[in-house]
Length: 484
Image (tube, rainbow, N blue to C red; front, side):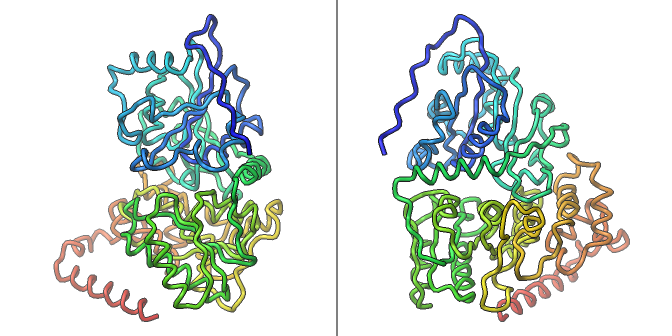
């Protein structure tokens, strides 16, 4: 495939002001979402569209940016120019740097000169507005309206931190993929920002173009099980050893379901030792394991190979596989992660809850068959039963909105005080053995919610003897689970 020609040179100043849209992306998945939204005419016409690439890897110098990844070429055509945020703020790291308030006017002038914006009216399209680099970019263009797009499942949860109203009130809408059919994102609703769905047909078309542009898409064995790595140790959710064990559990679960050919796609920044641990386990189990060395979107593999089963923890790719590609999916390890995830406000809690509530547990399924996936993503009844086909689910598809409203309030009660009645009703009527994992008694007690410790027993958490009994009970429960 011939190399993509560079974007034409732009002058640094303009005689007349125009309209420029700046699209910020840090992942190929996010850039594909933006391309699909553009194809669906979700944005007003503009004189210029600039893609601002942010490389948020721990060591950006050793990790490829999204515009250097296989499959990016067709996305470039949607934009007039591609720029690097890392280069603009070098030598600072995008995740750590933010402007001082007094420097904003000077830095805005600097960026307008650097990117040739002149006096253009600027609109910014951001992901993860509650953290840098998105927040820093928004601060540097204080008069620009903001659109937010969802790069994954976190948009279904509350805003991670309380935003400055000067920033939050600039947000006009939240664009998102319909990963959980019928569920509306909670993100930024405290500012009245409406949610707008990016059509699945447009997204699938873009992903097809990305797949066609990958020079060497790995060929997957027929009827294989595809394991998705997430590199959770980088987020300090798991230790490296615990994450290796999670991948081994995925492999064992797939083999127990009758799959003799397994493919593992590691996270692009994950260490090589993860695949070595899996290779040793596969050899012991006597199955064929293929470890993909080419960093490609999991959706490219769904499009090209259509695996018989997709296994992961709480990856967004599990939901795209089920909702958009009609593939069978299963989760592993969500219950233990829900217990380990701290603090309760951790924004990964919502993707974890969604995966645990809506997708079947691979290790609890009965029978040799793989879990059945939806037959057609266009069928709303089939899509409603996301992940159906085996394993006990704690909530139905119709109850997940109430569950997430309750979890959202417990996570951020100050941001969403209006959700308290919904949370109280859910906790009073739905709290049971299968839904307790989504909440913490101490948190419920602090908020005065059903399920917390009554006021007359509030002294117990501070009682040394009571704490010893609880520790022994937890240790016994963990020992029983390990024996199972």
